[in-house]
Image (cartoon, rainbow, N blue to C red; front, side):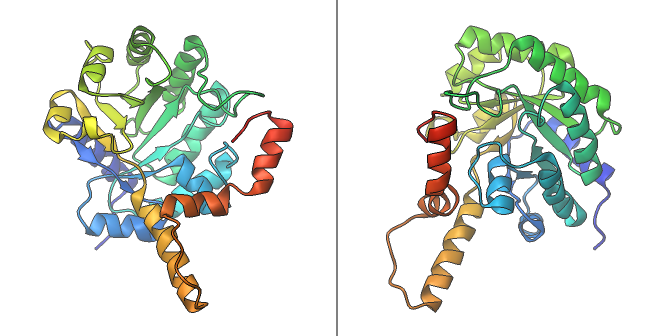
Length: 287
């Protein structure tokens, strides 16, 4: 079977956004996982920024991965993908001009959609990576992204963190990004359906939620009625791969099984003691 064209996959993603359904993403972190996801019938995949950092660098999600490294991984996936892939493009790797470069490179890589968030990255000295840029800067990034896009079928979602803002300010940002021309809104930190409905009241764009399998947001039919078209429950497949690799190699060395789960293993082999020490010494952050 021939691999669909980039434009065809983008149009397929647009068609998903127009349905009155909610679709759950597959974590697609390399070409093999993308092929598996398509074969199992997933409608859409996602290359997460944190997962790309782990897969490419074995590094924690400290905004250490560069644009070129992220694009290379997206290109490998895009080369074989038979389902639309969303790229978690973080903050666009810099200011509005960096965002434009990000759009150019990821469009060439073949992604069907991407998210640009308004998080202040990398984190400032003494701060966690949950601060947001000023609203005007966030708007500028979305407008710059739209200016740089060549294929209008590629969807650009504006992402913000509803967990660090009050409801009024979240709603203001969501509405501003809609006016700026975003194709959709991606939200992190939504607590429950009431919270979702309050902060998106009057918004007509497709919604994407990063829920981390929040039990308060599992009703797919209600999500669809609320305008949610894409849900990211996390990257369980990637962490399962880490666990399987560890167990297989451990058994080859005849080492007794421990009690570390997949998340603990990923932390063990990415957030090394040297990372913690460097963060403490140079960023004054207790990671």
